Length: 335
Length: 292
Ligand SMILES: Nc1ncnc2c1ncn2[C@@H]1O[C@H](COP(=O)(O)OP(=O)(O)O)[C@@H](O)[C@H]1O
Ligand SMILES: [Mg+2]
Image (cartoon, rainbow over all chains, first blue to last red; front, side, top):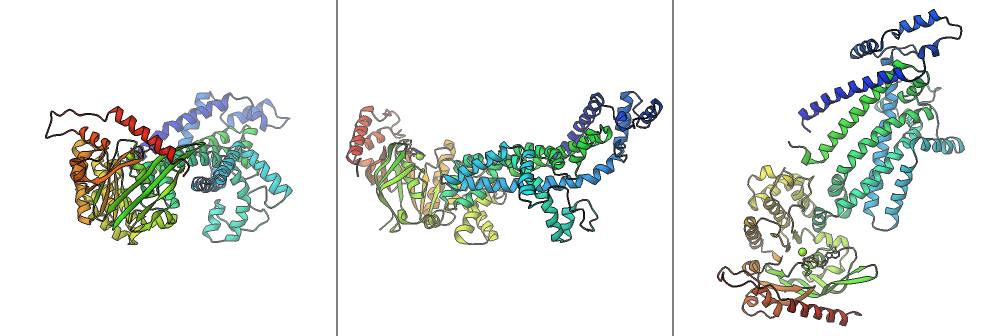
């Protein structure tokens, strides 16, 4: 992809974001549940309620509310959270690194597992290993991420307590982390014991998130590798004396990845969406967990801010997928 | 002394409960620096002979009998790794269809230099230099640009030149060219053929030239083997073939050739009667060898 195409894609993302903002705003106005009613104490008078409404701008006509909200949005102002009484933008900014670290680790685990499983499944020609790969992939795909999370909690957290099952870091632990990117920062500071402690918290939710994606992508990649193996250029490479493993890695893998990346991108957005339930399940302090709290509290500004955040992340993922697609496939690069 | 010796090679495809014979006691002999034409209609088993030599037989095909000797060594007794050492280095292939024989996601340069680094153990930089020289040798214009191109940027003829450069890159003793011009435009065929011939002469390589075109045989081959239904019907010299063909089928093939010197001569396809007779013979051979 050329720089021009890249910028075009970026520009195309703007109307998408605008559409998302529109839908989000009006959808939240029509769902039942009054946020003001939820935050007022039982003895409040009509006047108290009206005052609160005016404070949050909820007394104005809906179009006006949207224009005000959008205008503020352009200045990076997502409003004030009703339930947490803090600036939504800084709330999200503070929580987002936790989710990014979880999603990133999860994606890396999924990619590593996909490559190992599908390469093993395509490399070995006996009956056992390719079938074992199929069985593992089908199982991983058939169970949804939150169920994997539940299974891990019950097995590795409760029955055989090897891993902590809640939070991001041991709250009694003294640490001098300055950013919210705990894992990243600890690795940069070469503080491996802290990194290990963080990983112990991260591993179960990350694997739970990774497994369904691993299953479906592994299956496609393995079939794709087997199809690629029948191509004439593979036969040619075999006739030139290269080993099966070399050909699989150097000749077949990249070609086989081309049809796989598109599906991988879709799965990656599912993975990101999956953080909402997984973070709740593992009491992990990311924006997914925050989103559930916001919905329960009918915290409109926070919900809107979070949905927009997720939309931005989806757009970024799609952009990255497009980039990797044209990197993999030279026929896409020119023209 | 011969470079390649295929002796009584019998290959059978075993699928489920049926077995189909693909090669019926094929024998060939190739001398150093000579060109052997392997001629036959489509489905005769020509490519199967090439695959047997290159260790590319389909998974379900078994060699029941016979021997392939390369440089007095039995290829069939070598381990997979030992055979791979020969492939691409001492024995190379020019494939039938250049359009699909190059990896679409790898550059021309990668194709050429990976063979050089793998088989000759030279550095990547050195391999790149040699690759450019090779492209120049197969008469590709602007090799400095082509080396970084992908196959989809090249025409069919150019791709076949690249594949020829790949085949000759490690100065192999034997090159197997499996109908190397069939997939090309008629105008390009001649030039690619003469390039193969030129390179073969220059490196004094033995060439196993697979074709269904007797006209090409007349032009470049020293020896000829005629195949039909997995059998070699006749092993002879190219001169002998046209002056005194030894087999009815060979004679029929010669009659089926278009002749530029006699444009009025009718082109007679091989008669059905002759084919039926040959097929009956094949069945007899199969029955007689069923239990060997
Ligand atoms: N991979 C394969 N599996 C099974 N049968 C095959 C395979 N490849 C070729 N054959 C069969 O083997 C016979 C010889 O094929 P081939 O050597 O490709 O013929 P030619 O190259 O002379 O046209 C044909 O009857 C063909 O159907
Ligand atoms: Mg063939």
